[in-house]
Image (tube, rainbow, N blue to C red; front, side):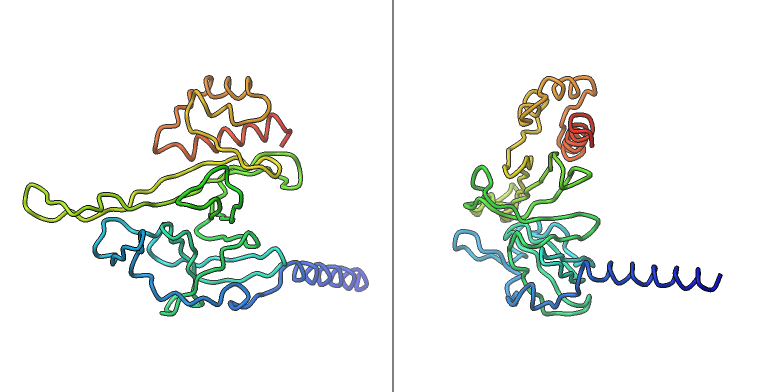
Amino acid sequence: MRNLLCISFITLLFGVQLNAQTLTVGKISDFSRQVNRNNNIINSDGEVLSLDEIKGSPYLNKNFAKGRIISDEGKSLSVYLRYRIFDDVFEMKKGEGDTKTLNLQRSEKYKILVNNKEYVFLKHLPYKIRGTRNGYAEVLAQPRDENKEGVFLYKRMSQRLVDRKTSRNPYGHKNKPSLKQDNDYFLGIGDKLVKIKPDKRKAYKAFPEHQKAMKKFISKNRIKFRRKNVDRDLKRLVNYYNREQTGQ
C-alpha cells in the first residue's frame, strides 16, 4: 500500500512538472517596451481630438480587465488589458491600480485572452481596413482540434470618425464628431483568409466546399443575420460546418 501511494505521488508530481513546463511565466518587457502616453486623445488623419470632444469611446471596454497573453514561444503573462479599437492596439498594465500603461506589440506571435474572449493578430487580410491589411480579430469559432481540417471564424473590428465638420443642431448647440464601428468577418481556411458576408443569400458562398449543404442549413434554420444576432448566427454556421462537414 505504501509503495502504491509512493508511485502515485511520483506520477502526480511528474505530471505537474510537465504541465508547468508547457508555459513559462514571462516578463512584461518580453511583450512591450512602448509606454502609452496618449490614451486620452485620438489622432484621425492628423486631426487631434480629446476624448471629451467626441461621441463614443475608442475602447471596446473602457475599464481594464484581468487577462493573459500567451506567446508562440510558450511564455505566459497575466496582466490587465483593454482593447482600443480605434488604433487597433491592446493596452496593458501590471496592476489594476497602476497609472502607467504599455502598448502590446502588434504581432501574430501572441494570443490574448480577456473577458472570456480570445484575440489573435491576423496578417494578409483580403483587403485593407483603415489603410492596412492586418490587425487584431476576435476568434468567434474554431475547430475542436486546431491541428485538423476545419474553419476558423474571425471578427475584425474597426472605427472611423464621422460628422467631423462642426454643425449645430436645432437648439444651437454644436454637434460632436462621433466614432462609428464597422465589423468585418473572415473565415480562416488553411493558410487563407476569406471574407464572409453576413447575408442569408451570400454567407454560404464563402465556404470552399459543401455550399449546397450550407445554403440548406441557413434556409432550414431561418438564419437571418440580423444586426444584433450576426455574431451568433455566423458562429452557428461555422460550428455546423466543422461538426457536420469535417467530422468535428
